[in-house]
Image (cartoon, rainbow over all chains, first blue to last red; front, side, top):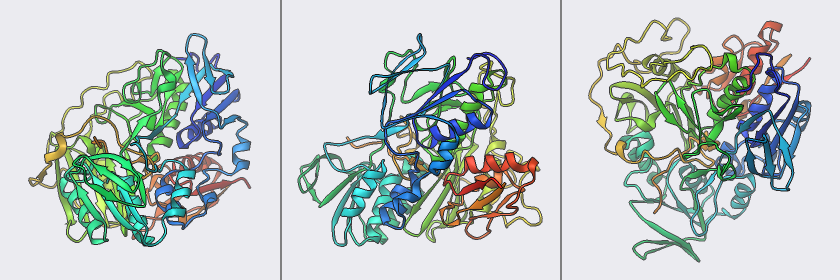
Length: 482
Length: 65
């Protein structure tokens, strides 16, 4: 890592941030706020100034917002950062020995410190539209006219949001999902089933357990030869990290840029956002999160650790995502993907107003709420932190302290004194762990299924949109279409 | 410094409340952010900047007085 303790660390005069979406923007802003005054280059393959992706599958697709609304900062705010801005040109190579990033136009950009924030791109089929960029969302919006037949491949968060918006626009919608229960691997089977019911209640022809073969003229061909007819096809089957440009760079790539708990991929090289796979000591696992909130938080952490390696802090967040589907607002904290048990601790699935808690090996790892006041869910975030064993948290910098496997806390973790609920607090929802005796929840049959990669994101849930929503929470799907 | 909230953009994530509880709260019903103090004291300006930075909807804007 770059040595030195000054802001801007000794010898760090040039920093390059590759990727100009939410994570890249948060990185450059944090570097400036932390006092870095050297040359700061921001590289983005899209020609636009940084914009937000979660609204693409929501307000942009629905037409509620004009495209200008998704700009993350005004051009004046961007200008004030004093950046060497390279937009509309992708990075094509990294030479760590010479410390240069090569761009598609052949130029080389030298660096002393580097942040990789190149995000993900949609997995594709033979055709159909994807929903990752503003242009794609605007193009699709023009074509979603009433009575148009839309086929959405993939019922993850992004596909679900797209289906919901299309129904509101008066389209006929068929939603194809390879898994038996949409989103079961992400949010558990009971909640996945409830979300399926919501689609059907809203007039979507949801077909699960179907293997999609290819997109053809007039619709989608299934593996069994059935043609699902449609005027438009949207493919939302997850995403790939954009790491090809790092081939031969010496960085370890394994479904994302592999980082330690400080978001460091190599000395002086950090990664953040959808593209980063790092060890989250709070959960004791390696994860790659395509949530909108993670993009900013991780980029801020990476930027600070790059500038202050001697005071580096492990990045140990509680992931968070939201998703809007029809009239449902979904909020979730934690790392639900690894859960083995989910139980509804408050409210009622049937009424679509509930809070579900997620456990792994008896430890609280997540909470998801539908139709509940978001403020009242926050105590669960705290409970998730308290249930963890963040080895290395707060440890002195940079030593790469092993994050430790995390000792399962077991049922009955004392909830601790910190749980809000005092005067002035809104009524708290459910009882975060500890106090309550845990009843046996639904065993998630699907938990074992898919653990391969990451969330699927593309745009989408926020958060997911992840990154964009797709970033987020996106994610979703991994299981994938065959 | 003045804190402005673009309320229709707010997604009720509550990130601002977690990093700047003196400056922000959330409405009880829908979780939309509420600015408690739109003119942070000098020693609260870092918190305000942190809140604007972590907002996942870019709904918080800081205007230098």
